[in-house]
Length: 141
Image (cartoon, rainbow, N blue to C red):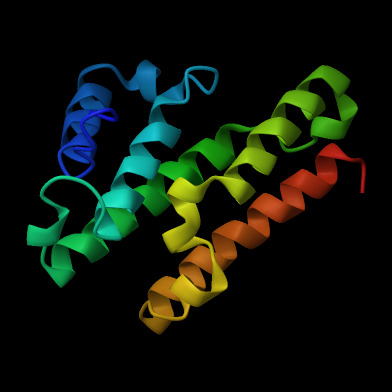
């Protein structure tokens, strides 16, 4: 999917795979849910094959799905990572990646968020705030 840039198709396929094998979604090391969220965000921002045919409603649905997948991944990380140094390091690397991954720019960067409806923008800002909070906890702050 990624090489062919079929981001609009990927969330549906990931969703079916997660329904068939929920443990696949929960495996943070494999990052399937994160990759699904990235594909959904990319399609919602109009990137990839078929994305130009998506309606505004379909794009909003894809962003909502991306948000739900990222929230689930964030919730799966330990709440007190600083107490376990190895966990803190891996969690820190993951979250730092989230904050700079261009695949998520359309749902993270200020300019793009400003174009979203208020309620949706606030949900994304809440997620990124939680990401930053957890990242700070990996540093013991």
